[in-house]
Length: 259
Image (cartoon, rainbow, N blue to C red; front, side, top):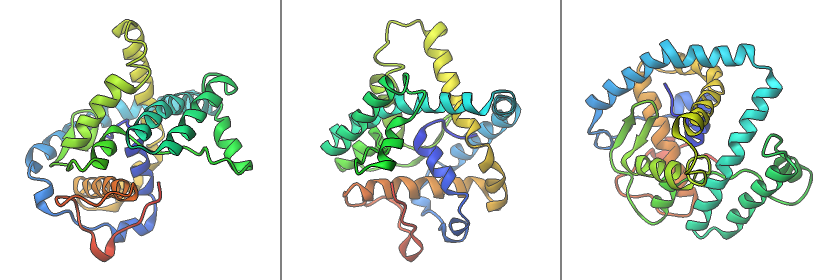
């Protein structure tokens, strides 16, 4: 079972690259002191995914037309740009904040509430760089030098760290427009259905990665953990911040990942 956050979706999509299968190194055990508990939660998530989430995602993929799935994905991606813009601003990345805010403005207005990703199309055919960025509050905490803390597997949400778990809570509670701006909306009739739909959309986009993960390693837990920590470490480093002392060292086998 995988987290529904966009950052880890990008992480898992990277796993489909064959080069990563041989280059991914083993994480220092000090980074995962809670491994017995994490493995238990990981197994629970996997079973829940096998029994409930994956079949629902496959049904969604099978019966929902591709154009509709694209519209749904674009809609949630547009909401995510609000989170990205806010965290870019918190990290003093003003140009990135302007770019992400421009994406929200363009896609919400001319893109029919985000149904069409016009901003990316504009960026591809012009010199205006308003491509999608990748920022969240976990990265914001890392930007200000806060260590990642131990690796942590969250029920339902999947791979994380103590720092990223706090980041998920802040992003989903105080920044994400579906949960922050419309606080007066009823939990059962609006907020829960929106969150569920977003979760299913994210899981459907990961269906093609399942086979790669199953064949990639003898220990799926270690493979997912190492890839997640490497990706998060790369995001912090690419943000121009020195890697914290407790982060993972991949030495010469390190994979550079462009954001």
